[in-house]
View 1 (cartoon, one colour):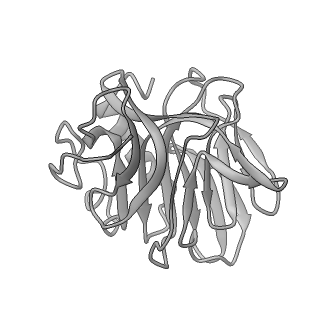
View 2 (tube, rainbow, N blue to C red):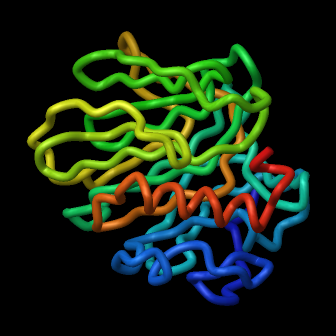
Length: 228
C-alpha cells in the first residue's frame, strides 16, 4: 500500500488539457478536487491516501488504482475499501462525484455531513431524513455519471449529470466539513459499498442545473466512452 502521488498539470484541466471545472463555468474556483486521472501509480496499486490537486486536503483509507475507456479511477471492493476526510472548510455547498457501479449493487456510497447517497445502477438513492429515489438517465448500468448534492440555504438538490434531480426543503447552507466515500454507519456498524470513483469536486457555490450540465458535457468531450 502506498501514499499516492499525482501529476499537477493544471488544477482546472484534465489530464488531456481540456478545461473541466471553474472558472469556465461561471462559478468560483473549487474548494478541493480529487482526480484519479492525475495519479501516477500503476494499475492494481492499493493507495492509502488521495491528495486534492488544488488544496491541502487528503482523503485517507484505501482503494485500488485502475483504468479503462481512456480514463483512470479508484476501485472500491465493498468489503473494506473507503476514503474519508475531515476538516473541510465551512461553506461548501456542492459536492460532485464522478462514479459508476455494477447493476444491482448498492454501490458508490457518498456520505457528506448528515446526508448519504448512492447509485445502484437503476436508482440514485438518497438517505438523510427521508429516502427518495428517482430513475437514473437512460444509459448502461455500468456507465459513468456525475452525482451531485447541493445546498443553497432553502433546499438541497440531489442530481445526476445535468438532470433537474430531486429537491427537498432544507435550511442547511453546506454539506458539512467531512465526507466519506464507499462506507456509512448503518445499524451499529460500518457498511461498505462497491463501486468506482474517478473524481470528487467541492464548490463553495450551489451549482445550478445548467452548470451541472456543463460539467457533464466536459466529461462527454473528454471521455466519450464514459458518457455513453
